[in-house]
Length: 156
Image 1 (cartoon, rainbow, N blue to C red):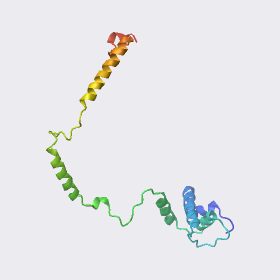
Image 2: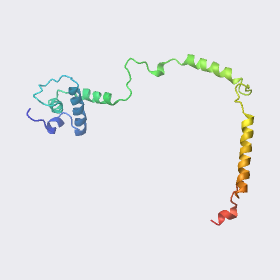
Image 3: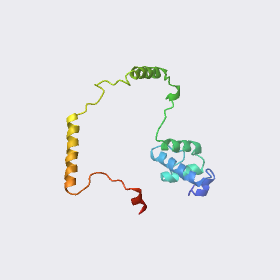
Image 4: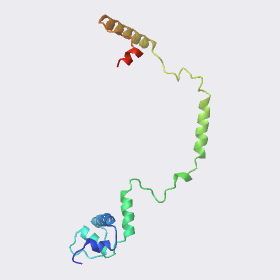
């Protein structure tokens, strides 16, 4: 075949978009060293891929599966046992036992579990805030929060 045309390939794969994707996949396979059943005749991989499709040498279904496999981000091994068949009863029993041992301590927390409160630090913070308020008052700022009344809101 001197030249490969899209019309030659469309006879094998009717959808032109599928044709492009499958030909690109086959050209990638050829680039990686997969053997071709056709003679190369000094053709590049893309031309050889199109020639294989046009002559029916490249299997459409095999190429489709290869495209899907290459696009998958998560690959599932065939031998891997599905998670649904796994027996979870032992883990459920263990978690239930742990939960029941913790349930008795919910109401009465021990001092070890409670975070320590630094009373000196909270007193220092309160004094600092009070000093700030006094300074702001001296400068003429009102430190008490004012909420607008309904009459002030209606003026807007």
